Every structure is written in C-alpha cells, then in structure tokens.
Length: 544
Image 1 (cartoon, helix red, strand yellow):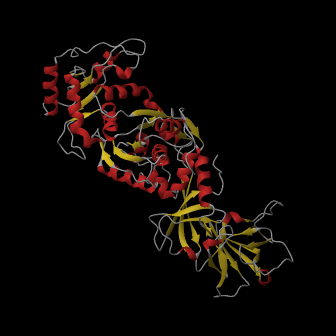
Image 2 (tube, rainbow, N blue to C red):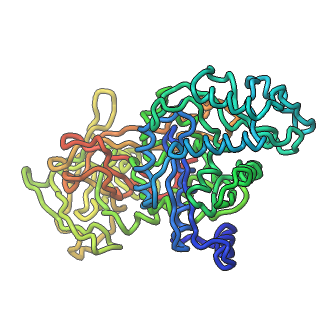
Image 3 (cartoon, rainbow, N blue to C red):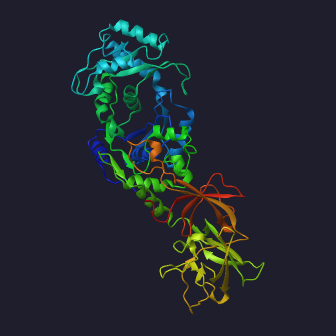
C-alpha cells in the first residue's frame, strides 16, 4: 500500500513545484528514554514514506537532551525497531552531536540581548508565568546586563551551580497570549553522566530550543510532529530566526492516532514494566513494536494499518480490530495452514490397527499452492479439541462430534463416538471411537454425510506445545480510570496441547494459521522439547 494524498503531501508537492525546496528532507526524532510503540509507527512511516515518494530522505536523530531518563539500550532498541519496519535512515544522528553549536547559539542570543540567566526556581517561575487570561510577570533577573549573563552562563557550564539553581531563558514576551512565548527556559543544569557525551556537560538545552536548531543544521525541510506541538511552532520559528540560521526549516503538525483498548503512552508502558504487571517491553500483549514483533505481527501489516488510517490535522481513534484485520489480510495467503490442538481430548479409534501410522499428503493452503504440501500422521490414538465434543444430545446446529454421531477427521476418515471414559471426578478423559476405512478423504466416498469436519493431531508423532492466547491488555479506553483497574484479567491464558510433527523444526517468529484456532507465531523461548506459540489474532474478531 502506498501513502494516500494528504495535506502534508500536498504541501511538499507545492514546495517542490514552487522551488521553495530542492529536496524533501524529513527526520524522526525519538527520545531514547523508552521503547517505541504502535503510535510511533505512524510518525516513522509518515516521515520515511513521504520523503521516499519525492526521492528525498529521512534522518534518524535521537533527541538526547535530557540525560536523566535516557540510555544507550533504548538507542539500540529504537534502531532495531526502525530497521524491522523496513526503513534505513540516511543518517543516524544525536542531538548531543550539536551541543557545542547549540551552546554557541545560546551565547549568541545572550549577546543580542535575547536571553538571560534566571535565578527563579520552578515553583516561582510557574507563579510568574501568569494564566491564559492574565499576563505573566517579568523575572527580577530579566534585565541583567549582557556581560553578567555571559559570565553566569559560562559558570553554569563550568559546574559552579547545583541542579535547578539557575536556568537560561529566552527573552521574548511575558504578556504573550501563547504561554510558550513567555520567556521559556532554553537551558537547565543537570549534573548526571550523559550516555553519549559522558561528563563533558552539566547544562543541557531544552527540546524547544535544541530541536529547531538541529532541524536547521541538518537541512530538514519539513519537520513533522504531532498536534500537541501546534502552539510550539511560533517558538520554533522564533529560535530559527533569532539564531540567524542559514537554512529555515518549517514545522507541520498532524493528528495523533489512538487505538481502542491500547495504551499509547511511554510513561504508562514503563509503569507496567517496572510494576511487573507485564513481562517486559517485549511482552506480546504490549503495544510496543518489540512486543508486536514477538507476538508475530508483520511489518507489512503495521505499515498497511498506518497508511490505511490516513493523515489529518485532527486526533483520531480507531478500533484495535482494524489492526487485526490488516494482519489477517497480510497473512491469509502467506502462511502455512496446519493442525494444532490447543485444549486436547484423547480419542482412541478402537478398530484401527495398533502400531500402524498412516501418512497422508496434504496441501499447506488451498489458496496458495506455492506453499507446497506436507504429510500428516493418522493412527489409532489422536487428539481433538475438547470443544469439538459434546456429550449431551446436541441440537441440529451442532456440527461436531457427539455420542453416536459421525464426523470426518479432516483429511482422514469418518469416526463415530461410541463410549465416553471419565475420571473419578467425572471429567471426560478419553473417547472410544470407530472409523470407517471406506471413507478416506479423496476416495470419492459419498454414501453418507458427516456431521462436520474437525481437525486432529496423531498422538504418537505430535509435538508437545504451549499456546499463549491473548486478549487486549486494557478492558476499556477510559484514561481517567486508574490503569490497574483497566487491566484485563484475561489478557493472557496458557494452554498445553500438541501440534502436528511437521512443525518440529519451526524457528522463532515463523507464522502459521492453526486450523480453526487463529494465526500463531513461534515464540523466542520455544525449544525442541516444548514448542511455544503466541496467538497473533483469531481468524475473526471475537473480543467483546
């Protein structure tokens, strides 16, 4: 799927046609303080796809201006996610690459009388800022001389002051109706080791100051961001203008994409991990890209989902079922269809010879003959799904196995259940059945019609497996409720069962359609002795 027409694409076309720009250059600027989630996929795909359409390019630039929460492990995880989605940035850069230039430009603002060192703490600064209806008050330090500001700023850089003791603020307009223009902080003191620059710096630029400068230095033409930065654009333009940057980038905002029953917040996802409410960032229930990858989502399904939602200037929410539909559409003709019994019930075919195993040739998919064929085993002992048997006399709508009722074991024979074996607690543990040799699939037998087709695996050749079945992690999308209260207690269920022998050599993230059970992917922790499969999604949506 290609990116459809949208307002940013139109702007880019006009800018090229009117010779405002020679080449489209975009950037994806994640902060390396967490793992990326499905919401970030929209920004990644939008930036890379738009640049690609116009034969431009995209930079990956890590916004590492706040060393308190950032770590090199997040840097590597983000690189891996972007590569997995199929994108190769023209350049991999860091905001910290520009710390020397950014510092020099801050000094330039001081010399122009457009920045000053302020002694107010956060609470005092907040009180001075005013409200949407009332102008702010000027800091007592706003009219320091240029010489004093230069000296104090250098002392800040040299480590003379403690965290929060002083800041550097832009001198703009404390009466501006835009709160972001009321002398925003552009540098603060943080005494902590930086993942990239070590202990070289103890002052760090704020995002609103560093980001437009980095865009300008890199020659970015269209700086795309989410709608929450709409009222920051005037500050973005102010920084570029007052720092007299030779290249002038422009910021464009698009609406955020929310998905029902899905957490779209790095802070909340981090809280889930640190509280051990999930098994890590790659927990298959997590909407992180690493979690979706482990669950079995394909990069194509995510890309088609994002492109299918379009791009607009308003925030939007779509159903999580839309993402699942995109996955089904992608996997339907790609993956092998095989047999797996998730919740097994043993069937003994009493009139089938002992120690005989019959191998039946079966296509992997009737819809894609290129996937080839394999052999499935049939013998005296097989497993079927517990849900495919009903002991009490069923109604006419029941199209599976029951006492005295005949069904076809898919690709094999008709069987009839004659007796039910129970344990001391009254639980059904085995079914005694008989088969009709004349009814072999493909033989042309038409004397009678079975009461349905059910899948099976032969017991002696089957491979022990664990199946992880998932529902959405969150019960609802009410962000005002406590997150723990919104967690779905049924979001992860484990079953022990069997798969056919053909899956013996499956590898991590190999995907299958398990007949009637859904789409599954082999988990990283799968072993020869115990195969582990994660259900990516059901064959059709059933979550209520």
